[in-house]
Image 1: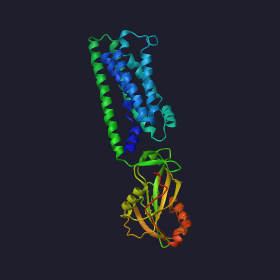
Image 2: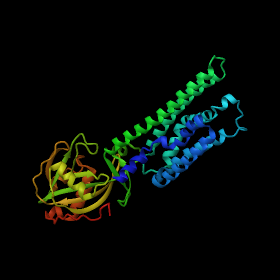
Image 3: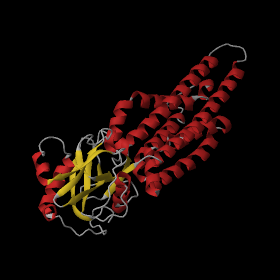
Length: 379
């Protein structure tokens, strides 16, 4: 569960913390001056850099880019030679420079997104982080634009009590910044809480080793295909194979005949636990025996499967769950072979049927099922 929480936090890292040094500088500078802002903000920026590096290393470059942005704004703002200004505008110089940098980020959204998703870690959905950051920066840019527009009008106007109105505007602007920060913190926390209750799948490599995790809907919709571990159990009796017809509501292989027991392994779940959970959910089977037959990989439309194939010859009372299964049927070897090219079987089952025939279990109808699985992804 700790790994899952870390994965969710990396996938939806709060953009406030990336921009916290910048936001803190804006607030402290207005109340206590630039010298105090530097003394308070830079230790915070250093702490966040170290924190992200040691705790969320996979998004460190992403975080460091915003630290560099903050430092660039400070350097430009502190250089009077680069930006000669009058006393009136100088009070909002930091906001002007900040607005300029953020506006460029908003304008260059698409190329920036392509660059980030290409070179950042593919083990986490960086698209989420980019979209969250873009949304927050867009809101901040609009606030700065409105504030600077009204402030500049007040600076160069002859309106009576303009200084008073400038102060009121500044307090309203700072209050709005605080509101944005608090709102964003709570919003991201709610998103994380919802994601924690979603179904997450491990991501494995070609050898079956876990290299990351991803929310299952995100995996199926992502342009990149991820490989996930799945369990498959074939039920065999006297030369026959027990198959299920998958419900039309299933995302994968709707309406096709498939191996009796199949499911994705969840994050934090062992292979044995996944088999037992699926057998219980699909057929109300408890403590039935099965043995390891083979591992294989297969490519589907939206993902890759790293399949752990098992076989069971134990005859039990089977009660299919109509939520997951439309029909069930015992198929003979001849019936399966006669319909192999009819397009009614899943690609997984076609591979598994060939493995089952070569094992000799289908002809003998006998196997010694055991509960000790070997070659599991968690070793």
